[in-house]
Length: 486
Image 1 (cartoon, rainbow, N blue to C red):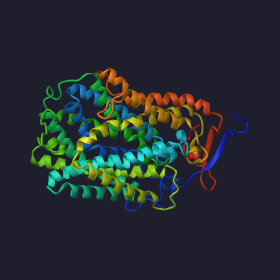
Image 2 (cartoon, rainbow, N blue to C red):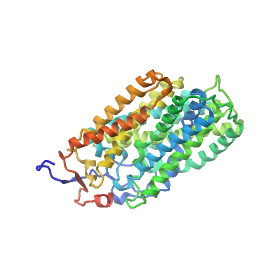
Image 3 (cartoon, rainbow, N blue to C red):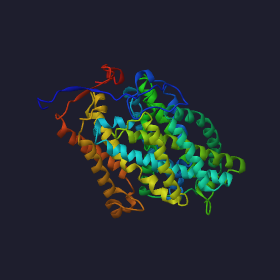
Image 4 (spheres, one colour):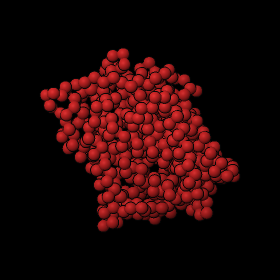
């Protein structure tokens, strides 16, 4: 280390303003600031329903349909790919969720440790656009189509109803989002449980896809991983209000299990459903429910609409947090709430444009992992190389400007897509030369970015303090309470 560079520094935190506590019908103040200890509440078990509800929706089912109905995997092939991809994505989600109570900040603020104050605009900006607009539009369309099938009301009007409810929940903020997911979970769980059982009983497993090679298998592993890992950039958003002394294991297990159970069961049901009905001439939600009978079919359509709201309440809330985590100074007490409303309007416009062309969402579901893989590679590599050091002060250090994170992520994205992507819009060099290879861009991006970060980190080491302690504005080193790490 340069002898002029101190080995440690202290940084004053940006503390979330106002009083909020456990109030549900109250607009959450502030944006992506540190949650003060007096505001902490809740228990890890709440994460189970927080992550069950948003996956009990049609986008999850569609991944299973994609596996057998479009890629052509047999049901056993699809089941193995789903278990592998979803299991990996749920595991990483649990690991990231476990850090929230210690640090008291959203996931995209935690990302500043590896990317720096300004470099973090890359992952935070991508997450804001993809979560607050992209995923919001995908789920809004599936919810609107389900409501249209159920009621016969014009699709555009159904879309307005679904979007309006989503924006309202996200506008109020964290506690209302958590409460909605909690009460939606048993309703969605019971309805989808009945629908899935009926689907599994009626399915012809020998006809659900004729079988595909390793390429098709890897595409579904990547797609299901991307879907589960799509929640990873939100992980700490829903654990940052927990007391800092809660169990890491219980926190991570509850979050990861919620993602794994909901995604796995519905994706398997989607894979099985393609052997029952082709859905020719029907919108996708109607095709999935056509074999369930009138009562269960209608309840399932209602659940699909409700599940879209559950997913998008989280998407737009976390999208708005990611935007405020980009480092923009928004001097408004309701900065996050106003941002959520703005993203909701933009998402509505995108959804309206794609309301009659849901086929375009297949590519979106597959490419979602292309940026998350390299981002995860950097985050986990940084976590490893900084072990034993105090890092909470880097969360709000505007002079923390490492270059290793954003360079490794950009290189990871470019190389993995250029070499390994296998999409309708673009086919990489490897799948072009060996078509049966499939799409492993996510895994390649994770490894490339992580390995490059380990190399680049050494070149930047010694140019800034290795330890940074977080202080509250009053001068207290709350970092000892937050992290307990050295």
